[in-house]
Length: 317
Image 1 (tube, rainbow, N blue to C red):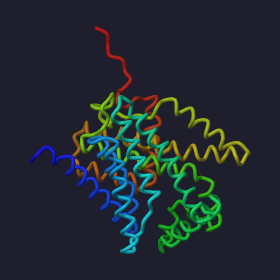
Image 2 (image 1 turned 30 degrees about the vertical axis):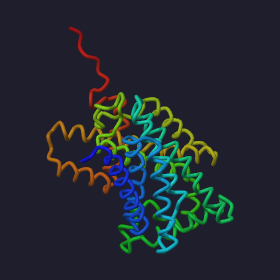
Image 3 (image 1 turned 90 degrees about the vertical axis):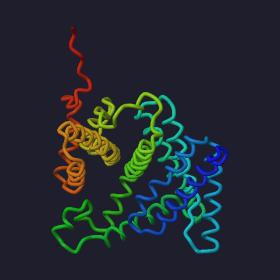
Image 4 (image 1 turned 180 degrees about the horizontal axis):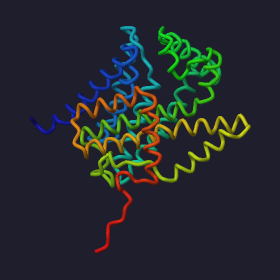
């Protein structure tokens, strides 16, 4: 194959992947949410291979196809959200290509994704001619109706759902209260998913974490003080303090769950448990509530017990 054809092939594959992910996300009702979260990946991969100019060209080409797809075929187009995904992918690619720690790569991407999500929602509210808070409350109301519609008819199953026991108005107020945490958790999920995609494609961090297995990852130790502060805020008889504490707690608990999951995966790998049984274990952890809490506690207590012996000093000769 002539070398001069390679850049065009890479760009064409990136554009095809972007369009497949985009139209798959808008056409598939439930799984589309996961597909949508992968939209930054084509931008990130192309940036690592061909630079920022190629990412801009990919964004313009993708936006053009999506725009005309809506105009002539009636397909849904959400160009501000497409720009948001491009910015996330570009941030992830740029930070992972430098000698930054994993926490910096993911943290920077989460911050950019959080700000981009707010910006996109503000733009959509402006285009709709509505106030941002009114638009967000309407968005919450629509999601509450969707959640209620998904409520199982089996009462024993319904009791285990997070929104069990709340009427629609209470559920709407609760979701509005934890909006910052929900946006940050969503941004964290998108950042981690696309970083994992880069690692699978051999385009992970080129710096300090290049050869470091993800099984060795741990939450920065200073965050335990933020967790303790969140607990104190929840005990205060002040609604504003309780709201801040609740949002902090909701953001930190998934981090400690991921650390506990890394510890568990490390142990299963050391015991040479077959891959199939490992994945069945992970699936069980997500479906069984007590197991999920146990994994969070495992990650939290790692600060003191150091299960993987990451901080033990080597013995002197």
